[in-house]
Length: 292
Image (cartoon, rainbow, N blue to C red; front, top):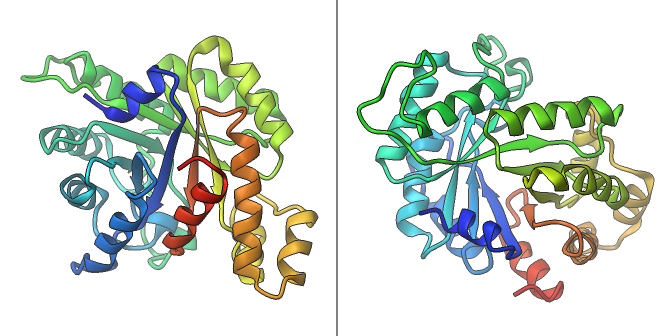
């Protein structure tokens, strides 16, 4: 039984972190990250070829987290970019067989922005269809309706962008994912708490749980990358000004994240902190926000 699901169902505030598997087979650095994050996190997202760049598979890395997380669970990530419906369903069956219970379904970044720009994006399914296929597996059947010899019982999540405009379209997509089987959302980085509150209020009647994304804007270079490369996300001036004028941008980004976590903890069902490799900062943020 997923501890993450149990906590959210019980109304407990959850903390999730994020790691990227290695670009190779040596996962010793990843293990160090897991041990650090597991001090304060209840679950850790294991990204799936994040940013359309080559990494060890989320499937294998999630199992490593399960074995070494000291009770901190992996959230197995599946993107629609790299596999067709046969491979996606096969990997989901493998994940359940390996003991992975939490799955986050996302579309995936365009491969032209990654380290293999010549790669062909598959996108046989979109994220809503893959969520629906995952729910079918929980009901003991594949996406054609054929019975499986052994069902899954995944805790299914999707991505949400509460600051998207027009919001009505993003809200409709969220409802489609919920109707397909998503029961929790992890959001993109929040920079406007009022817009997050708008999303929380709109989705409250559905019972879906919202885990607010908090990104460590740790340097002007990171801010420039977000503004130039991440579609739909622009870092607001108040964050850019604080980071660019700070004597230590990393320290200032930790202060900003701590303030966000304090504020979002009054609205969200949890926070999802994306440390961009600064894992120790997650422990400080959670402690300084009074959530440890």
